Length: 519
Image 1 (cartoon, one colour):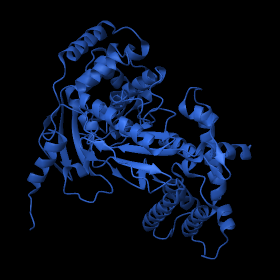
Image 2 (cartoon, one colour):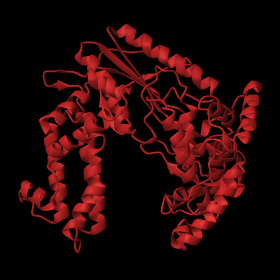
Image 3 (tube, helix red, strand yellow):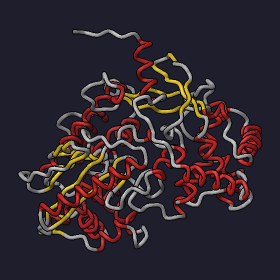
Image 4 (spheres, rainbow, N blue to C red):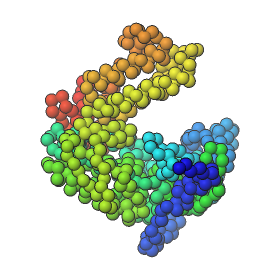
């Protein structure tokens, strides 16, 4: 049987799911939390002339830094940010300074700035796109709002960094990256395997994580756990209140609805507010990258690994219920590394978590042996597809200068091959040869060289490093980033005790050796 739906019915269902959130109902916030938020608000008003970061007026340098920042897509006002960038810089600077300082000093985020066009985007890799949860939304706001958030988000980021924000969280803050989160996970597991221990991990999945944030609880955490007050607190409070949104599908718009939950993915402040909301998840959950949470267990025997992972699952379920987040049991996965015959049975609300032999975490495919053969094949395929797209755009590089072709390769093709490479750099010569082959093919196609042209000659002409040298360079760069971190950082501590067995390396040991060979 085939069902046909009108566009209006589809839009209504998406609106119910992504804006009105009729499928979810947040529990009532305790009166004690509401009263504390009210107290934080009163204190913030009294502290309006306090700390320079949290309450100081917006400076000329901050305003100058917003020009040409962010996307130029028009929000509900229909005005592109190109208007600001194309106008007389001095006049526009003075206008923004008056406008933003007025809003900042009054702790007011204008209502028109809180209106969102929510763009529907399909989530990649879904088997079925007939369900609302197969899509996510990205909020696009007015051009003045976007640039204003550039200033206030930088101030919020400074507060978090000065307060030494959770070292196990690697998203959205400076000097943190997905590569570091992957290194922390793989180093723990690989070290355990090399030392003869057993290792497992649970990869948690939240349903609509950004959209589930309870704003009252968020404000409570902002004031209590982070000590944020003054104009910055009032600014965030106003930013989160009285928001409204409408769906944009193709070129049509839906009706306006109040948006009372979530942190508005797509805004500058939204991601920072989200990681502040989940900062107090149990300590057994690490590493963390936005809503991608993992718990790792390395023990002497399998039973101990099971117990530790099940304990982590229970702790996170309790936290989720307390904070109105929904842990999706069907999309949460567990892996046991090393022996693929070991079965780990973990329970979430009566449902058994699926055990898998491979899992793509933050864009890198982890296999049970951690030899990254699957990752290399995935990277090669992705690089070839990216190359094909670029070549289709330039029509076999007819009329395109050599240097332009090389720049296109470096910007649009090579990044697929190098993503998080320090994590999986210790691969076999056979896998390195696959990367060398795909780079050679890409450069020959970009340069218009003959098929039988020398690989070395093509790399010299293009000025592109051979894969083995480039791999070492990326490892050295990551080594420098790690050693520049604070002494109590988990990666620095793991670097001090990393190990190898023969030619089997932990990733941090391999990075260290690559740096030693380079120096």
